[in-house]
Length: 498
Image 1: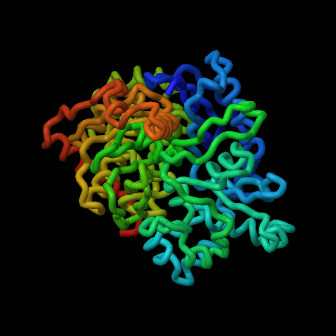
Image 2: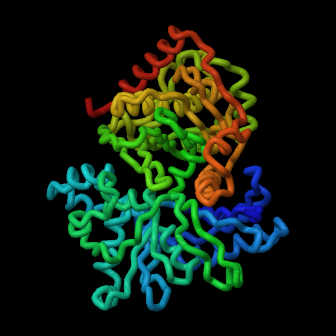
């Protein structure tokens, strides 16, 4: 191949980013464009699919101009995206019939509750690995089909197509010639059977979404089609590959290629995904089974745990308690107290998730004495993030029977050296922090790049210098056990559903 670059599209909830990546795996340049998110009613969240597509084109042009390259130098374009956001469009006009309903939207909560009352949750979970929840795409598509004026006539005429954001972008990029998605995005819809790797007719019937609307499902490294929109690359037809949902892309970007490797994305909350191998594991206690990726026709599975409040706890300490103004000031205060001295902050501001699952639990600060300072409370808040990840990893190991090898870390709070070291101490395992900030788009780049021969194999990617720092456990087992016992005691003091 004489093509020198890959163009990665990272279509996230808040905006669209385009990255130009060279053969060394280095990001040459990037362009980011935000889009509007609207909230037409309480709990409703929507975005404009056409605005997002136009932003994809604009970001791509800006990134390529900044890099000083033309479309003829592109080996491929790759796509990673917000996962469960749902779109339905008219294939005749090329226009959406309604706004994209974003994964955060709660308008279908009553519908999902009705399905639960009717006893459908086990059916959905057994086939998809997912909970019956408005978070996922199927109920959103059902809402559009039932509530948008004129849609039923278009449906009867065979004019409609449905998809997640990747499908919408692929269809537009190929000028309507390709309607496809990958295994990871399909697996987040509540309509895709992760055992048979097919759209499930029983689930489609349950949610009243005809399977004829749904895209062809391919491996993440397949060539999905070629760009044909002349406003993007002119006459250049660039292959589209490396299509994968954003959280799974981060797992791949973190190079969690073997069983027992996991990534934690430390954000407002924390998402933890563990590679569990080539067979799905039906995990309980609120864990979600997932397809990690499909490569060369073979599927790798993962199990996911979600922590509701992690980085947001630090924001609460800053904004509500006023204990520090900037994160630089926070770091200075943390240096004053190398230990929380028995102070624990349990951030149950919206209840507690895995492994406690108590929606009525209330946040608390325990273990204070006359010598407690704001620095101790700040440290307790920071450490609460690591304790919750520790709990989640223990649950993942218990439910899957898979032992954690090491934890790969990304997200804003992972920049905190003290937190990462404390996390390693609690887990008794290595914590690896990558120097690459954009791990989701780089995950799609790695998959697509190997798929088209831009790189020869995964081993070539693995040997690239992507690790920024490796944190090694540095405390005695007895000390770790004492810390964790104190945390368990603090958590038990706030649990209501005992």
